[in-house]
Length: 478
Image (cartoon, rainbow, N blue to C red; front, side):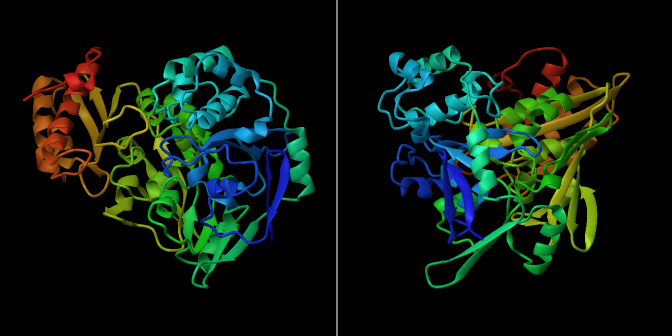
């Protein structure tokens, strides 16, 4: 069937679309849509920011999100709407007028992305409740004009917006239900893509096409295409499968569907643990969190993914599903080796369960990176301790960036469990990290730095537990 979506108020129907065709390339080739710029090609700079609107079942509205068009694939727009800076009209909106009068544009290359991020905030898009600085953390201004941009965003917190015409177009196009498509790649091979509309259909597709590439938010796979020039063959897009977007809170914990986006889970994760909420706030910019999923972050098995160490420390369990059935495992058991996870070719991440910390529990999470926002971790440490009557009765400690996979620190946990919660125990735990890990040196940090920093995070846990506000770089021991 044809790929159908609405672009700036016009219905678009495309018969031949490859799974790796990007939204940005489509826009740049479309007359009158070159306002959306290509910067980094990896979702870091925000120059390509557009808004994507998804219909809400049973409601007359769209949920809008700011995303990076450079790493979003065209099939992911099926049944949705995309709004670009050109779609705002020939006349400046009040927000744009404020930006112009406030000197919030210098060279202008990044300006369309800033406009769209702020426009999303003004119309109530996902993340609109965040401070302006957080909304713009995924937009890079190389001319350092952030002050006027932040002021412009603060001055215009709301703009009127009406989705009815767009919804009418989508209904006329009959975009509900499953979708699929194909295209001929260079060299003559055929690439296929599928969009199942429920989890049973997804399981059936994976049984038919074992090893098909599963894509939820494309924040990782998108870079394979833009940076490695990979031609995607068979892709199943799962970002809108209803069951995989379920999020359920209970007194026992939080159940997170495999395609729940970080932005959608942020509030619930913050309620589960404020430390976890703060960590999630620093996972990429808002555009990345609006697309990237918790399940995808787990499934790609990155040793420097920020989510897995924190979830491992909290005792999360993972459920995989296929046409053959389901199986559940502790999250740490999913990561076998670098680039290898315990997932069969016909399985997908169905959900994750994260237990809720209890009263005597101490939770601490720290991410060390060269930039505070929108950067990859050099070291990510996560700690869960249960302290009863001054004694550590249970402990889970996990790190990212210290090994080929996100991993628990067994020797460090052994130094903590059964010991008094005091400085001597912290010193022993910090020293034990050197027995747990033999990290590599790379562009993010040397092995020596990682070991020293990981040990210092133990001390940061101690100082914060004593009610002391300590910056990461100030915690130096040994």
